[in-house]
Structures are given as C-alpha cells and as structure tokens.
Image (cartoon, each protein chain N blue to C red):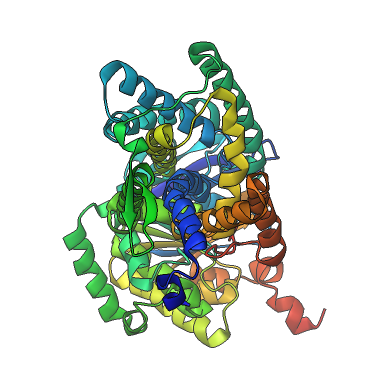
Length: 244
Length: 303
C-alpha cells in the first residue's frame, strides 16, 4: 500500500534558487526507504517540505490519498508524520524524561503519554537510567537515541530521519541503525536521508538517489548497492578501489 | 554580622535596604514579562515600560472614576493587557519571526511602538504627573527593636509581586502550555517538530508578557508618579536587570532585580540619589564584560 506520495515537488529557501526541481517519491507502508545523493542534492530540503516546515513552490505531497501540502508542521504531525531533524533536535535544558514528555505533546493525553514513555524506557534502558539528566549532558549517540525515542512516543505512521548517523562513531552508528530497524518492527514506516550511503542502504528496503534537486534513480536497496553506475557516481567505491 | 544588624550597629543601612528591597519585587515583576518575551521570541521589547504605563493609567482611572483599589485593578489590567499584547504581536511583530535578523528588527519596531504609545498617552492624559493614592500609601509599619520603618504600600506591592511571579513560574513549570513555552524557548525548530504550534505559543507568550506588564502597572501606579514620557527611564533599568540575571531567565530577573535594587539604594544613600541610575548602567557594562550570558542565563543555542 502506498502511504506517501510526492509529485513534482519544487522548493527553495527565501527568494533563493530552487533546491528541489521536480521530485517524485513513493513510500510503501512498512518500508525503510533511504535517500542518498551528494551534498546539496536537496535531501534534507525534501524532508522539510514533507513535514510542513518549508512550503513548496510547486508540486504536491499526498499522504494516505489526501494532500497535506499546505498543512502546518503540527498538523502534519497529527496526521502521523514525525520528523527527526539533523542534530540539535532536543530541548537541551530539559531532562530526558521531559524531552520524552514533549514527544507526546501532540497526544494531549498525559496518561497515554506516560504509558508510552514506559514502553520507550523498556526498549532503551540507557534512557531510563538517564531520565533525570539534562539532554545536553548526554553523549552524541545517546542524544540521537533520545531524539528517535521521542519520535516513537507518538507512534507515528511515518518517521522522517535526517542523517541519524551524522557525527557519530562507527560502533554507535551501527546501534543507531538498529533503532531504525526497531521503528520498522514497531510498525512505523521510515524515510531517512543518509550521507553514509552504504550503511543506510544496507539497512533499507528501498533506495532513492537524488542529484541536483531531481530523482535520478530508485529501486530496491540491494540493487542500488550492486549497480556499478550508481556505485561509481554516488557511492564512491569504484574510485577508491581503482585508486583514482 | 547578623548580630551587628540586630544590635543596631547598621540601623541606617538596614533601613535603606528595607526601603530599596521592598521595591525589588516590583522591579522583578516589571522585568519578568520582558525576559519571558525575549526568551520565547528573541524580541527585545523596548515598549515594555510603555505597556506598564498604559496599565498604570488604566489603574489610575479605575481608582479615580470607579473607586477601585489599584491592587484590585490588577484583575482588569491583566485580561485587557493580554488582549492588547496579542493584537500588538499579531499586527507588528508576528511576521518574520523565523528570520535571522529578527531581534534587531524588533528593537527598532518596539522603539517606534514606544514612541507611538507615548504620543497617544500624552494626547489622552496630558503631561501631568499622576499617581493613585489609596490610604495605605501614607501608612507605615514599625518593626524590630530598632523600630525600622516599612512603608505599607511597598510591602503590599512586594508581596503581590512575589505571588504573581511564583504563579508565573509554576505556570511555566507545570502546565502543558508552560511546557510548550519552555520548549519553544530552548529550541524553536524542535518544538515545531513535536507538534507545538509555535506561532500560537509566541502570540500567547507575548500576551502573557504584556499581562505581566499590566499587573506591574497597577502596582507602579501607587509606588511611583508617572507621566507619559518617563517610561524611557525604565527601559535601561529593566534591561540591565534582565541582562544581569540572564536574558530569558525568570529566576535571573528576580535575583537581578533584588541585587540591583539593594545596590542602587545603598549607592543613592552614600553618594546621593542622582548616582543611583548609574548603578544600573555600571552593572550592565560589568556583566556584559565579565559574564555576557548573565547570572542565570544559558548560552544561546542558535539553530
């Protein structure tokens, strides 16, 4: 079943040039889809448009057959699309517990929020252990874990992850992608952007390659990983192997 | 030290501190709205004292026409000023809130707003000095062995200010709206991603800051005399309070208010009243040099 559809999306910042220049995307329910592409391809911009932070200049975002193009971010969230931005997405002077509570803000139901936070603590004992600490005292990996845990409190239909592995040590990156898989196991569809293309595709079902604001290729993640042209252009392996 | 105070060694100084610290509460209440509005929206509201003056005039007319005690007129000022704040925010300040140079823009905008309010107040109420005169403004308590003099008006204003500040603090700390406001203060973009309607939170916070100015205006109406263009004297005073305490911090505003009120009182006693405003400016310069984020301020985390 198609959960989310993006058609001919054009967007940019302020009066600047178009960053997205007609993007199409289809997200199936239950999938982990990974968007890759070089810097400036418009990956993060695409997520911002989908979650309503940035208004597109043209094109449409359709969620469960209904256009959500013109909705405010809090309205998009209520539909069931939760965005986890790149870095600094926490409330630094609130405790871990308060951050999770803010995750349930849109539920407007304190008891249900507490119940779900308990479930998050069960899945992430580290967060439970640190529940009284301010978010800015956590390590980078723990902060990312908290940001993703906070998204789970809402149990959204789709979670949008913007470079979840950015700036983290390799061992922790592995752990973060395990959490991405946990989203899927909890029945949450994942659309993520990854600079670490290899790792991202390894954990994904479907891949989408963006370049210069357009989608150049999409297909099953393992096909993309194996495709020599894409490897050469966007994954950089061939060049490394040949020592160029 | 404490026993010296009790034995009457520092009777004069203690008396000065009683006079000045009982004003500290009102300073804190005046500054709390300013710091809240800066914390949530990064608006430096130079018109905040002008808002306080509008409220003081409402209390003045409630007192003279309706025979309403200024403390009671807080109940009128708060809702009226809340609505006024919401309208001002929507009309003048709401647009461009997410642009990088917003704070600079608000300094100019609110400066103009203060000028406009001053003009309107001058036109409506003339330049005459006003103040409300409920009976307790001329009454005093005597306390302690040294028979310290405590002006009733200042004591009442102090208690009312503390009640209102504690109420504000609890609201921010424990209610759903309070959570939303603090979240928006700490990380506007993230607040948006968890479903906080930051536009509404901003509007509400500005209304709340203006409502606090409304309450402060009622208290000011019997503590100080006022006429339309003296609101400028309060701008530097209030700004130095919140810079000292840490911009955006409610606790900081309270501590800053009492610290500066006490210091200004002692300075004015030792060197003459004309030196007391200097205390505020000196504090402003010093804190900016030594600890720019203020006593309780958190380093701004820009997104």
